[in-house]
Length: 289
Image (cartoon, rainbow, N blue to C red; front, side, top):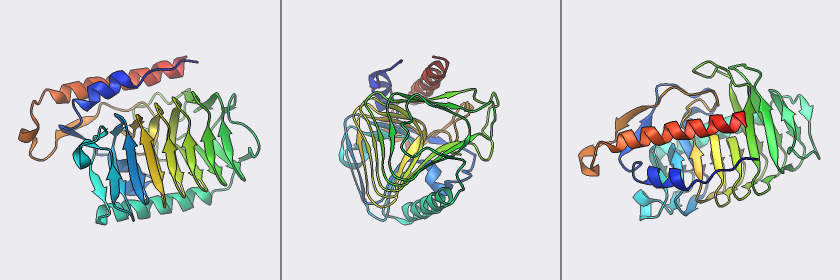
């Protein structure tokens, strides 16, 4: 099983994310305005270490976030907007609640209750766990070349992954953009805990809280908690695909944030583009491995 360190990406992104914002013209299909956030907490978001979020940061109905450079001088960085306890955050929370209920109400195609996800290869569908779900090792998701491929995991209570767990995609659509239904969603009835150095993927929608342990990354997804906290520690969260999906994205459009002249060199945009391209290539290499 291949693993990779977050350190090179975190170092390069830390130099750039304070200067630019990642924007997109594509609207989210399921997540609504919550799709613009890499992390959305219900009560609070706390971070330790040089976490990087390719997306926004929000909290609602709470309003507290700690451990980020633009908030309290902490080591965390993010590329999108920050909304803490304001109207924009409340709208994102409402959209998240609607998405959570929508996913929970889907009829399931397969009952995996009591089955460890590690070692499985699954095709698009709705997978049900009546209580807790566990991932130990690697889960492979076969998209069958369909740009509308959707994987939904309905989990009655907790989602937990072991150290160094991996979620891999194979046979992704060759199209540049995902279809309207494409995506990977984890609807979690209570809380999610992602283990140390796990290479996770998809959108976690947890009723209570989410903990990403040291070195965990989330590809093509988000950490979205309705009522509790999101706890981060040296993580990389890639929410740059705006519709929640995992198709190979087009080159991102970069625009300066307001009052860009106060942030220094415009060349940081090129640095961020290079890092994003490297991140995409890493993900492709993981899929081929």
